[in-house]
Image (cartoon, rainbow, N blue to C red; front, side):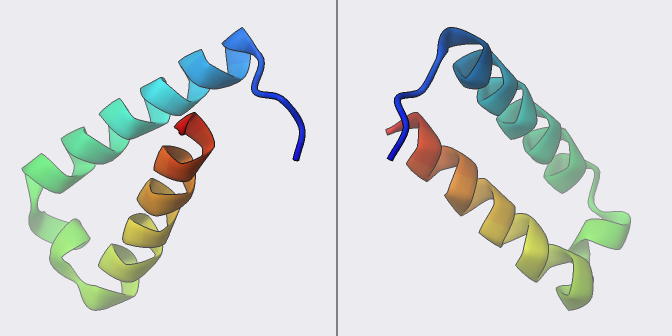
Length: 50
């Protein structure tokens, strides 16, 4: 696994903020076809930050 560089960390945190905004808005994010890939993306980003 490659080391995480600072720009990657900033990008990942920005992605988490974007996901949080999308989830808080509701609407289309409540659809399972959108929610499942969004959850997978969130898990991947969190794993990258660890």
